[in-house]
Length: 262
Ligand code: NAD
Image (cartoon, rainbow, N blue to C red; front, side, top):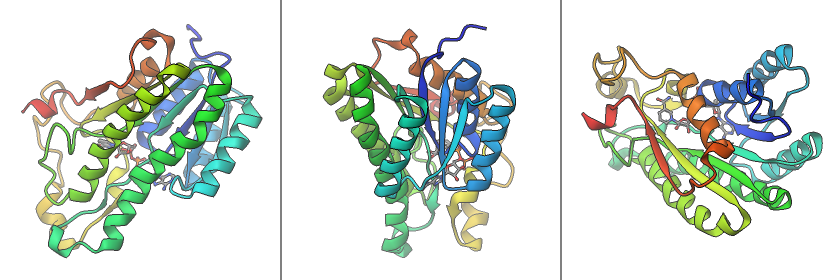
């Protein structure tokens, strides 16, 4: 196989599960060293073991809450020291958070979603920039969603959608600001992907029955029989992380099997 990431180091947030985990594995398979950030220490230990069993020493787990600035700064430094720099950041960790009517939403629940999805993205990018500048190049990929940009069908998802749209504005400003350092910033907008994301939804039992379908509705993604797979998203992230996309920055790519076109 082509080792397009040999000699490169990637930080992947939310790498304990779903899209982040699949991407960390794919990056390692193609030669990268991967620093895997997540606050679920059991899950990152699993990701770390899975990668190191096949590519010894390629992965190292860091127990990080991306909304905690001191912890992010420390973990990025430790990762850069351990793997000798940082070339790629996949700012991917996120939560569904509080789901429900706006008039009933508690400020602290609203803020929790913003803290993880927006502050977490900002902090991951902020603390990685100095290392990419030192390298003279870098690629940052941010996981947004089709929700809040292409689709507004997620009833009750006002906080989540706000963060997913906000990430795009942030990415475009960052792309502009960082272009002179050859640091690229791009966004991916997945549709429904089969992951553990529903565990992060904070919702009352009554509302759950109304807004979250138990079965994935057939035909929701015209290109596929069901939701997309994390491995499909990993392929896109690797393209945006690689030099094959060296002239692409400030872009947003939907990956949803045409879900947003319905
Ligand atoms: P997931 O729940 O399987 O994985 C997310 C990981 O992020 C988990 O391991 C979790 O522990 C971690 N995480 C959560 N909060 C964190 C924090 N504060 N600090 C560090 N780690 C934290 O879900 P996923 O679907 O793989 O989600 C990844 C991203 O994809 C999210 O940003 C999500 O909004 C986005 N997304 C998912 C879908 C989908 O249908 N699954 C669709 C569109 C966008």
